[in-house]
Length: 140
Image (cartoon, rainbow, N blue to C red):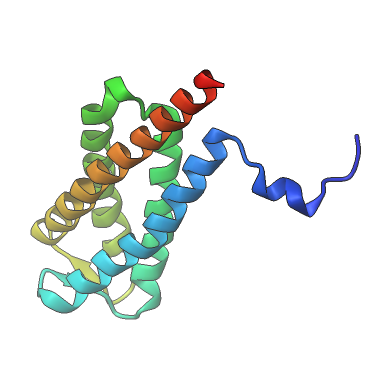
């Protein structure tokens, strides 16, 4: 095997491009949703700024893993529903495990609804990209 050249990083396959697109969008969206929730309601309280940051990282890793395993045109609804349930459980469990943090069920439910709604649009975007790249590759 030869050495990997730097230019090879720009020639990613379809699955890798989807993961990178999803990662960039989630890196912006998830922390924003958590921080807005933290400062806008009494149902979501964190004792330190690192806590929603850690929660964001966990949600992003789990979300991307689930996308790779489940997301397809046929499973869009099930994938979004699973994102909602998993987000709700992670937010409740991890947030209340942190010191000086408290998230009520209503707060976790609200965050999970907002995240699942954004996941629906993200999944549609990723599926559209997948379909577009499939049609381009079959036309050649």
